[in-house]
Amino acid sequence: MSSSIRAAVLGFAAATAIGSGAQAQSMCAGVLRASLVHKLPTPLTVGTARNISDTANPELTRRFAEGLRKAGLTLAEQASTTLAIAVSVTAAAGSRGVTSGTYKGFEWMSGQPAATAAPSPGIRSATLSISAILTDNAATAQSWVGTLDCRVQTSDPGALAEFIGRSLGSVIGKDIDRKVI
Image (cartoon, rainbow, N blue to C red):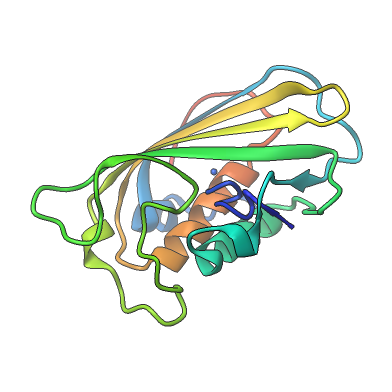
């Protein structure tokens, strides 16, 4: 698979629709917006520019991809679209393990695999601004853009990555003016 799904699917951005509002607030509370710029190809398959193994944290990228799958998306190496994600992070005052800055995918989180890393209290209360762009590979045109602005409510990086994937994946192809999550 690409590394953007691979890099969060290039980093990050949503499987079986987002769960309840309470669940959403438990991972990252904020606002989701999306805009369909051009009709998406059918059948819709999603890939990334990078391979999962080429990412800074392959385990978190896998969890993000799992969130996309749970949102109902089909992921493929030879996909009809390419998903790219960029993340702006503002670390909470006094937090450790998270540095404010702009990143591709999950490079802002610990380099330790989520399966072996202890919870990362430094991510709780960080503010994330995530931009996701889906490009139609045949038309070579950006077809969908989504943004997720939220404050992290968990210290579990894997659960957060999956939540972001599920949240973004559930709105790919839709126009959403403002959805509170």
